[in-house]
Amino acid sequence: MKIVLDIIGGWDFFMLDPIGKELVSKGVEVVYCVPIKKELGQYYNSFFHENRYKYGLINCTEEKHYDADARITLQGANPLYKKNIKMQYAIGWFYQTSFVMCEENLKGFDHVLVYGESSKKSAQEYISSDDISIVGVPIYDKIFSNHDHDTNTVKSLYKLDDNKPIITYITTWDEHCGIDLFYKPLLRLSEIYNIIIRPHRSLYTTGKNSSSGYFTRYCPETEKSYRFNQRKRIRKINDIVKNQQSNLDSLYSYETLYNVANISDLIIVDAKSGSLAEILLCNENIPIIGLTTMSEQEKNSRFYKEIYDICPIINDSKELIATVDCLLDNDKYLKRRKKIKPYLFRNNEGNAGKDAADCIYTLLRNFRGPRHCIYTLLRNFRGFCQVNGKRL
Image (cartoon, rainbow, N blue to C red; front, side):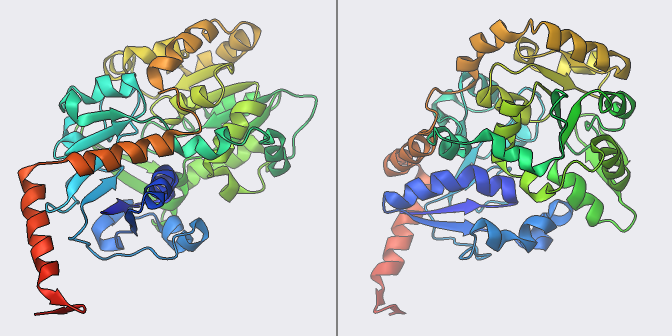
């Protein structure tokens, strides 16, 4: 059995690698495929490709691997090859038209893997429930299985005042990034609190790929193009954190999300970001505030209702400081977060990678679709017609 994992950037690698390692332990041939720049266009992640050996992708390949039994991706099905069984690990959350939880990206897949019941409910609007499996969140297996994990190590990355509470802001990168709208109140909060900012990596890669720092993105939901200056956003981030952050690369690690969720007194996050739910997985007890640049009407129509059981979602910069004070004094969302957590995540912390690999392995062994049967016959025939590696 041969499976290709499509790795577009560092996050894809972090999400899929635990599954890949478990598949290898089952005797499956696993290939990490990194598409070349011309196939990705503006979404080419230069930082990841320049540093991919650091992630352990020494034997990655750009070959097509038409002979693979399946390909697994976090992206859409269109770039994948018709001759492979196509599987998606869907990571979309509360945003109804997120890049995975929409018909455009879910169509064309033979099977979809999701975190929990909530994700399954969202996905089955576009794909049969029989073709969806709940596998949990493998990316955090290493942390959850290591009970001696020292969360205080993250403090070495910052110059923090021990007398001030800690607030962490986790951004997204596109038109939904709140750094522009909420810059002034965040700057005021930095005078009272230690502020840690975990910026989305694309803030840096899209700014770097543009000579001016400007980046233009077409949004299919609104049918509009948005233009934003990523370098100006980076300068604003530096203003707010006051050079407290000394190691940006470490901030990109998924371990940092777990760490800041356990050392912070409050988390602020762009509501469109998948990190909003993952914070809950890492620490259900921490107060959360979601930021959005959407209007009230857009906000009510685009987010799934479950998001309002986790935290307040604000779109007015004047409300941020008062909301911070209110939640630090009394987190009225705590009970609701604890109640909804089992609905969002499968309860298999530390074993999600193994459960996902078991699911994939079983699915492929039992798959009897016509495309797979015909291609398997052709592949076996090709192997039969070879002697000592040479075609007869």
